[in-house]
Image (cartoon, rainbow, N blue to C red; front, side, top):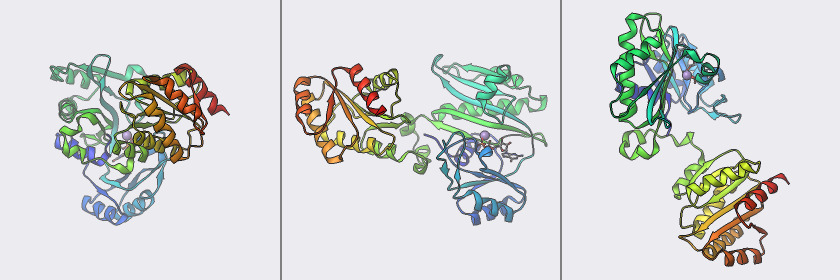
Length: 386
Ligand code: GDP
Ligand code: MN
């Protein structure tokens, strides 16, 4: 789960990480009074779950309350397009009005789980403010990495090593170590999967502050943190994914043309791989679960087909817990009720798969029954090419 910058900064403050003084606003009037309370030059920042807002025109300076209101009028309601939103952009509903800081230097600080070493890795760079991927490819020597053994945690000597790696001026070393230790504490105590401060700003008056804040949480751990779960903003999430979750279907929307309906997460991943192997991209990940009942199949069709990119559907069901003939009947029923108009390629394996093939072939709907998974993938990819 992602949260907004203003929420991440509130959490930073709770964990002792300095942030500029700020308030969230949902209307230009609220922005006006927030700027008044702050009482100095402010920045007005679009709150959406995507980075690159600065370049997209979602971060503006304002020297007085009236100007803050004018900027908020432009930003609230705008469709912000950044390299992270995709060309369709994101509607801005809130802004963060924040004391403008005079930045001397912009650094980068991130923590993320590294699956290869099973450690948290701290990534830091004196080249902040821009995308870390660009720094990594153009000046990799400017990136400092430190792996943290989860059994021991981030040790002060490691934090100092990172601070030295950032070429921190002597008087900011202690402050930097404090930020690192507090950020690591936040990372582990709230079950974060990623935190990013870009830029970590050194101000002209010698302070060190988180000027931006990004946090992603591990969804599986949210049950442990009801306060954090409350920060979820459904406006920022894919509506079909929310609907799928309400029906206990695991669905992730992707950008390809082959809609997939599969039972079992592993089989769903394999299905996506084989679609790519035959030259097309999957439109989604969808696991209908072990018991692929008619209702679930119908709901799955409904969600799949609401994506207008889908040009063919590949159903790949292994009949272990559920019998294939029951799945076949469910598929026919659902397809009739949903009025499926794209080609549907079905691969059913397991108990009663031969009966299932007969049922599908003798139905008046034009299903393509595949012989095996490779055959199914090939046919699905071909169907998107017509
Ligand atoms: P992002 O573009 O979505 O990553 O949004 P950021 O919060 O990182 O803002 C983009 C850029 O705006 C930063 O890299 C800074 O250069 C600039 N910026 C943001 N807040 C301030 C501020 O208070 N003072 C100054 N001088 N620049 C700021
Ligand atoms: Mn940023």
